[in-house]
Length: 114
Length: 114
DNA sequence: CAGGAATATTCCTGTAAAGGAATATTGATA
DNA sequence: TATCAATATTCCTTTACAGGAATATTCCTG
Image (cartoon, rainbow over the protein chains, first blue to last red):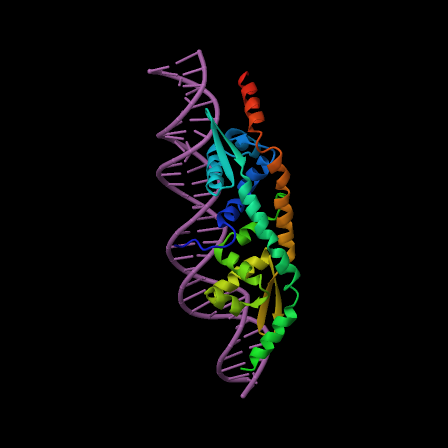
């Protein structure tokens, strides 16, 4: 019943809003990688890498493929598409209403008269 | 000398990655508003509204215009443009490299032989 | 200039989340 | 099956941050 509808999944944002996780995402641009490689390349300890990867997976940003011993993580397109739509939806707001502060000021003035 | 360069400002993400602040941003789509109106419409207490607005301003997402007693907050386009560029820059990564997990698996196999 | 409205700030408290260290789990291999 | 490599999980501690309540600040108006 909770989990308000916000046009974008907040987990995507909070997932990305942490430096190490952002670095992981940037690294995975180049292609899928194992936990070990991710940790190495970013200078993270393995457990922390695993934890961040879990957060990113739970938020839908990454997916895992188990390959024997290894877990190979890669980016999922969906959250990025969603983020793209969301950001795009601001274009109109930006162009239109933004700089008619004037209108709003006039409104305020009117309300003074009460 | 810190503040790593990440193609996107993390403050934009952490600014947005909080439900009340996201709600404020969504609300301000419709146009600029005073602190009091924002608090009213979102059912926030005035001090919390002010605090969130401060975070959003400091992160560059909002700007303020002082009008006598009131402070009128509105969205700034730049962070949204930046976010748009950043997200767009993933398109190639998505299309190209994503689903050649196969390549990576072969790589891994080769490394086994050492 | 006293009082009130709009907003910001401070202080306190609770909580979520990140890092460190240790350990558990799973799969491959000798 | 004992062992090793790769990864996940747990427990602990510290820290960042959000909300509540109170108070400060600023500006307007009688």
